[in-house]
Length: 340
Image (cartoon, rainbow, N blue to C red; front, side):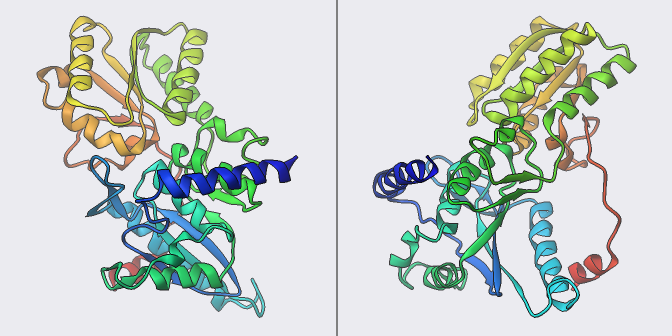
């Protein structure tokens, strides 16, 4: 059965390559960062911000947090290779590809990590940017078969990428993907998460509401697996705890000004719903709050978001509540290396 699925999926990929992705380089416009080893892992991570309109990736670097994640991975690989007790006589290598936080880009990077799908080997050194050539990236991919993939970052990206990688038998280890949709082993047989599932977030958020005696709220969530599944969990947990939701609104994956204006009208009509519950994808969180802060009524409400809100710049967005994940112990070597 799996071989039949793979055969059908290969046909689909060929069609996708020829038509849907004819203008999208599988390894991205900014090339890649590779360090070869005996065993090589692929890393799909947000290096640049997503582009506007039809542009997949933008020119601006992403938030410092994501860059530090990539840097810490490189440092970790070095530490593993320097310790002969972990992998004696074996070196661990990696290939980092920039997915820009887009689900379509994450799928393209996953395609590049599959050994049978190197469209990028047709590119030449004319596709050169930031001192990196696509041909060098393709050489790293072609010569170093990827045994597993770390990333992508968001649940929505993993839903796209992990289903493809599972068909090829390539394990995917997601650092923060939390959508329960990814628990379906018939679709994501090789997917593993390092982050608690969303049901724990929903329970924690509504438990906090009960503790604060908040019984009337509203819910705004993102289009896609993360937001929509999170919204279902919030609705179910609210019913259990007797918490009423004045309204629910699904924010499109590419929101426009009229969407935010509609939210403003909903808030105007429901001033008693003081607590606004948010389950938003990472790539729309900052845009959402920038738009909301333009409205005078912004400070009339308590904004309480899921863990994606924690990455907001606290200097720009004060007074917004969010869940947080337990912090690991500080690693002095990482801080020292980051300063260099």
